[in-house]
Every structure is written in structure tokens, then in C-alpha cells.
Image 1 (cartoon, one colour):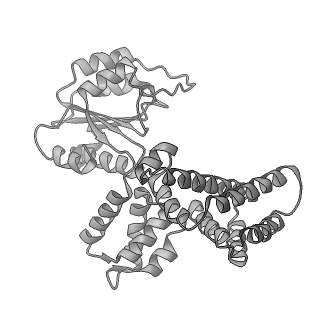
Image 2: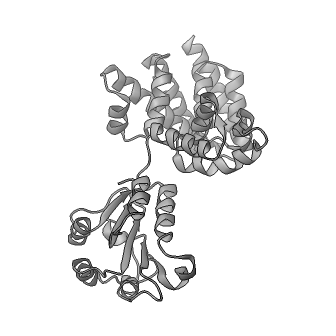
Image 3: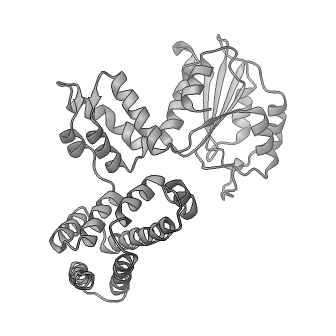
Amino acid sequence: MDVTTLRKQLNSKPVGQVYLVLGEQSILMEQARAAFNQLIPEDQKVINIGSYDMETTPLAVALDDAMSAPFFGEKRLVLINKPYFLTGDNKSTKIEHDLDSLEAYLTHPETDTILVFLAPYEKLDGRKKIVKHLKKIALEVSAAPLTEQVSRQLVMQQITADGYQMTPVVLEELVKRTNADYSLMVGSISKLELFDLQYKEISMAGVQGLVPQSLDQNVFDLVNAVLAKNSQLAMQHYQDLIESQEQPIMINAILVGQFRLLIQVHVLVQRGLSQGGIAAEIKAHPFRVKMAMQTVKKFSSQLLEQAYVGLVDIELELKTTTRDPQLLFELFMLKYAKLAS
């Protein structure tokens, strides 16, 4: 189930005894945590909610709490955070976790305890016995990264519920600046609403002024300037990145990666793959693939490959010489513009 379904399920009776919240979308993980916390009355939260980090606390401590009766209330809530022992990650830690006791608990869960595993991971290790047992017992909640479409819908729902409006053009700018990351989008809403409190409409000025572009988006603008052979604009974008304290070697590495992505997308588009198929094939974020697909429509594979080779040459120069990075990039732009003309 998703977090919205979880909220509805928690408002019904009976509430489950064991839950697994799995996924890397931090805002969804926190929304799920908040939904569980609401199950315990405010005056009982201190004594009937236990939260344990498995990277610093033995599992046995959390299980002891889970097996204790609630104080002056109907339910006890025990949150097990970062249960890395459910994954394939073999952390080097001095903490020992008693998985046999967890097996025994899952076989006979306490009826007055709500045990929640908050697992901020892409997946668990399905080969492990404890994982198989947990998945049979637990009600699973997805906190996996949302698609762009779902992220847009949820953001608009929240803005509307707050009594605000947002035009499609402004929403598009917000999506671009956050790479369609739902957590980043939601994290921007409160300050955008405060900025446009008077008119109750999220403005382009608010988004552009309050939501910083990601490094990837800044580099994407630089890529577009390179492909357009606009040397002046490309140098301006490059200078902006330098002034924002980005290292030349990092800027160039991201440029190389972006052109590698464009070449891959160009090839796979020619093979007839869809956006989702390409994202799965090259293991890239669907939004990045979408933007790349829009770009490669305008350029030949030869132009993309020429830019890629030129940037790889810059990388070699940056690693082996002390030549000025901005001069190297300017020379690359002059050479590329000449080749591409």
C-alpha cells in the first residue's frame, strides 16, 4: 500500500500488529512515521512510543520494549529504524542483533504493540530467512521514489488543499528545479506559499527565487548551451558553476556523464524503446531520461559523440596538467563550434 492508503487503514479497526515501510523517498518515510505516531494519544507519546536506530542500538532492546504492556493506554508503538540486517549490507559494527528473538516475536506478535520497521532502502535481501518471515507477517507500505506524474499530482493536491493555485508553467519550473524529486518539491511548498501569501497563487518569481536549481539542472542548461554552439552562454553557465564553489573536475565529470546519457538515450530511442524502457535499461531516473529524450531529438549522434570526446580530453588535461580549467573549456567550445558548423 502507499502512504495515503496507510492513513486510511490506520483510521480503521483493527490496526495491524507489524508493518514494514520500505523505500528511499525520505518524505514518504516521514509521512508514514507521522501517521503511526498519531495512533498514540498526545499525553501518552512519551511513555508508549519507542524509537530505536539499529545502527546504534541492539535489536533486543527494541524487542523488550515491544513485549512490554502499554502504560495507561491501549497501544504501544515501537519503531525500528534502519534495520540494515534485513538487507545485503554487511556493516562492520560491534552491535549484535538477535535475529532468533525477532523470528520468535514475528511468530507470536504482541497484540497490544504496533511494531514498525522503517527501512530506507531500495530493497531487502529476499534470500534471508528473517526477510521472508517478515514479509509474510508484515503489512508493507511503499516509500519508493514516486514517478513524475504522481509527484505532480500530489504536489497540486497539497497546494489546492492549502488554498493556493499554481499554473502548469510554474509547476513545470518547480519540477525542473527539483528533478521531479517529490521530497524536494514538498520541502519547497511552505516557503513558496509564504512568499505568495497575499495572492494565494504560487508565482514564477517565487519558484525561481526560492528553489535553487540542482547541480544536474545547472549542468543540463550548460549542456544545452554547448549543443546550441552558444559559446558566450556556455561560458556564462560554466562561470556561474565555478562561482557557486563547484570544482572544475566535478563539473566536467558531470558533463561527461550527461553526454554519455544523451548518447545512450539516442541509441535506445532509435531502437524504439519508450521512456520507461530506457530508464530501466540504463538504470537512470525517468525524469533525466525524459529531458534527455527531448534534447536528442534535435541533434545527431555524431554531434553528441564529438562533444563527449572533447570533454573526455578536458578530463585528461585536468588530471595531468595545471592548465586553467576555464581556458580549457573555452578552447573546447571553440573547437566544438567549428566541428559542429
